[in-house]
Image (cartoon, rainbow, N blue to C red; front, side):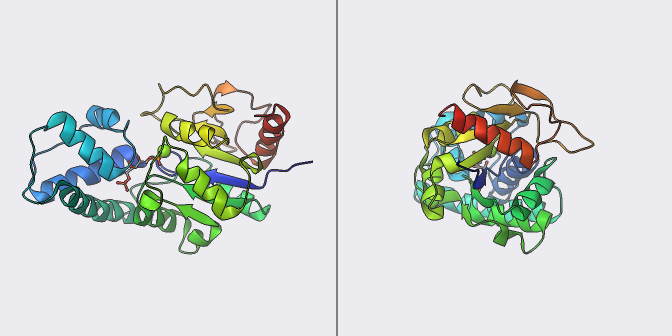
Length: 259
Ligand code: XBP
Ligand code: MG
C-alpha cells in the first residue's frame, strides 16, 4: 500500500499572512526609499497579486499604471534594484517579529517531522525572504527541517506554472502521488494540480474568492486543538484541526480516487 511520504508547503499566505503586512508594506517602503511616489493600497495590492513574484509584480504595475514610465537605466536592472531594496525592508519587518505563522503551521511541521514525513517548500518569493521568515518564527535550525527549499528564480516560470513543483519532486526523487501540498491561492493550486499533486487550501482575505474547486479540502486555516478550523469545501471527517491522522486520511482518499 502506498503511503504519504512528503508534505510540500507554499509560504506566502500559507505559512504566514505575509502579503498585506509584509510584502505590500516592504514594496511601499522601497518605492519611498527610491524616491517614487507610488503607493500600493490594500485593494490595489489584491489586484497585483494576480501576478506571482515580486519583480514580475512591479513590471505588471508599471505596465498597467505607468505605461509611459522609462527609467534612466535598463528596465530589468531598475526592477531588480528596486526589488533588492524591497527584500531588505521585508527582512527587517520579519526580523521585528511582525509576521507570525498562521494557526497550526508550527505544530503540523513539528509533528510531520517527528513522524518521518519529508518536508519541502515551493514558493515564488525570493529565498532570503523565506529563510528570514522560517528562522525568525521557527528558530535558526528550522531550515534543516526542509529537504528542499525551492524559491524565487530557481525556475524561470513562476506559479501558476507547475515548474516549481516539478523541481521539488525531481530534487526529492518523489512522484506526485507520494505527496500532499498546502497552498493558499488559485495560482498555487493551479501550479500544484498541473504537476499532478493533491492540494489542501488554507485561504486568507486576499484569496477567499479564488476558485478552489480542484482542491481536496478548503479550510480557513490549519486549526489548533483550541482553535478549530472551518471547512469551506471537502471532507475533513470528524477532525477540527489538521493533524497527521487527517493528512493520512486525505492522502488515502486521494490515492483511492486515482487523483
Ligand atoms: C508569493 C508571491 C511573492 C510575494 C513576493 O506567491 O507572489 O511574489 O508576494 O515575494 P506564492 P518576492 O505564495 O504563490 O508562492 O518579492 O520575494 O518575489
Ligand atoms: Mg501563496
